[in-house]
Length: 541
Image (cartoon, rainbow, N blue to C red; front, top):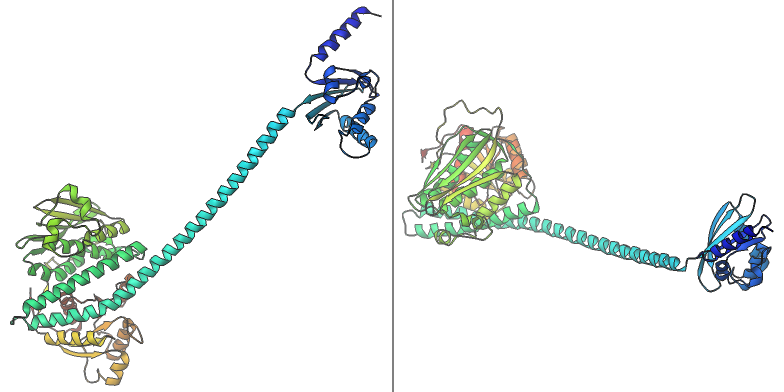
């Protein structure tokens, strides 16, 4: 025997005993050639199973009889384990050891058909993996729980939003309906008061009548402001930009606010212009109305308010300039706040402080720009910037200052239709006081049954929109069919929706909103009288 070979084998065996893994090598007949001490320790094998030549099946049978492979026939379990270890060129498997540890087996087939087995105690790693799996499972559970909670919260928020939207819609609808019902008696009161003012001019009741009118105007302003704010907040306003002649917007300001300015001793100057802009006529008109009203309210007697337009490249700047109380830069945000009023302004005029708040909301809704320049004690300038209409041509007629028309006696036949008797009586009293031949009806049936237009042809018709049997627009069409297609007409309505105004404009019908302002009504009647070819005895204001 070669002593050097024996020494090498001994050194190899000693080296294998110092390896932390258990190692065993089997010949092609799956008989043990050699194994290290760690192999026997991990498998808890008796010494006689570590003798070279011991079959692998015998080792597996011992382990199976001990119960390491679980319940069942030990021989069948041993054969199955041998198949698992030798089933392919390389295998990796795990099982519980006799001491409850987790053992990992790695096998590899040798070139001569033999088999090498290495095994390790991977209990610590398995426990770490199990702990990590539990953490992951816990994390997944928490994520699922949080996701479910978030889904529930989102669903609750969506329900809350839907309820809020529904409540907002109901509020808008309620305010629209309530304002219509409230504006009807307010309209009658305004008409009665206007008649009273004219008849009381030479009596001591004139001041009382003006006080009543001022109170009614304050109520109307509050209701209009609240209704505008409701429509803006609910998104009910749908801007409809179109080419608009600025002179038409300014004329309306002059006609509507001329009497107010004269009553307060303020000079209202409207500068003529040929400019045409792209804008929503009604909403931009509402902005100018609020700005002009504020300017006149907060300008002392003897002061001046100027309304006009300036061309700035592709833009047009609509200016409302006053010589009123003004305010400093620190107060700019305050004047646009709801229900906020400067102390000096509150002493000059009544109100809730909503006018400029509505202006700001309308400007934002329309995507426009509003400039503000003010000096305390010297006045203010509010400027609305609009896009100029491309290719729009101004009128070829020379610009003349648009003047408010103040009517004396009129020689007009006017048919008034409204489903509210008090409004009809008030309208009849006011128009009769202006020298008009007035006939009234509450519906088309009243006109037909009463034969109101037999032998009497009206010069114009003032028609309510909400009638009992039909709409005012359809009623006007019926009258035009029976009286003549040329019959001038105005829709007198508390419905301020853009849809109604658009329908009226399509049919060439003017619109006067309730509560009716006498100056606006006079201006409308003057225009309609011109359409009918009937003149009126008027004097220029």
